[in-house]
Image (cartoon, rainbow, N blue to C red; front, side, top):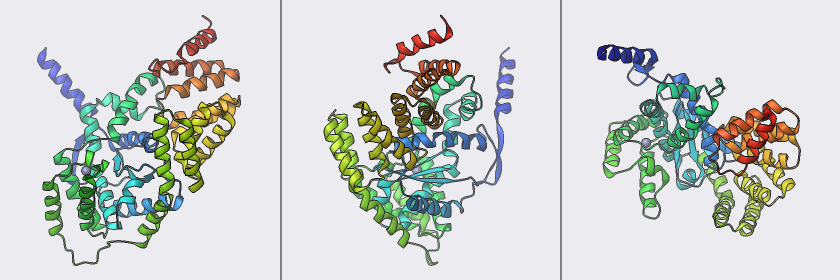
Length: 423
Ligand SMILES: [Zn+2]
């Protein structure tokens, strides 16, 4: 009996393993999570990561710069993926990656650095974690294959939707703030220094970044150090790695582009500073003070999509539906991957009884972050209002499955659902 069981387990393991070419060792390795699924999972969390970091910086030139710099380094990495790079609004000094090659650089990080090789060093390090499949290995270790495949196929298999979505938020939160082990950091440093160097950058840029972070640490620890610990031994090891490289060849230390972009970020920084102050005021329930700060923020930088979104939220909560909806629509147009303004626009249009417009925005919000229960509740209300009762029922069911019971609309959703289903 026991032996049979063991055989069964072994057989199952092989069924669910896939052979993948490991670009680092050049060997075929068995992996549980195939690259195609790893990419699907990473891609699915891009909007969540953008939302958690207050949207993407709303300037095409800035996004283009990060994309070009990132791609230049990614070209010199062995794992061939469709790497994507995003500059997000948050002031936290951080950069991070999602599985499958989605790299995020924070506005706060660029502002804290002095030259391009420092930024290249951090991006190369994040690319190294992806190349070493650290995210994938985390997922394999913590979650079973069934969960991973159903997460990756969340839109393909609508049937078990509710159950799968229960895991969505949990996995997302973990992926966004994965803390690396000492060994993983060592591996990422080894690879990252190489990638930056092969792309033509001075690998000592990373050491300069470390210096900046160590200095900042005395006042406030940069967020990057929370997930990528930086003991003195690590600095020593990176120095030793760099010593082995030929530093006499021409290496890029800096570029005018970096400074043009940083300059742009510096000019709009006061606007974002006001946004964060407004957020604090709002947390203390000082809505009027928050609104005043947001108005100033938008005077300085009218495209500040984070400020537009927060102002929309406050106005909607004050029943100023028309103005609130307009602001949310503007913010959504500035970043089509930013969940909050899409949800707020959908909510606002529902309140204005413009149900079809509301459906457009809420369906999009649902695509971006599929586990937020309010989106389903208001979709249910929209579909009910235009007479599409079976769609309304489906959305009420999902809303009730996903809610924590404290959203305030649960009883109403139950009543409406019962009425549609006729009992
Ligand atoms: Zn790291």
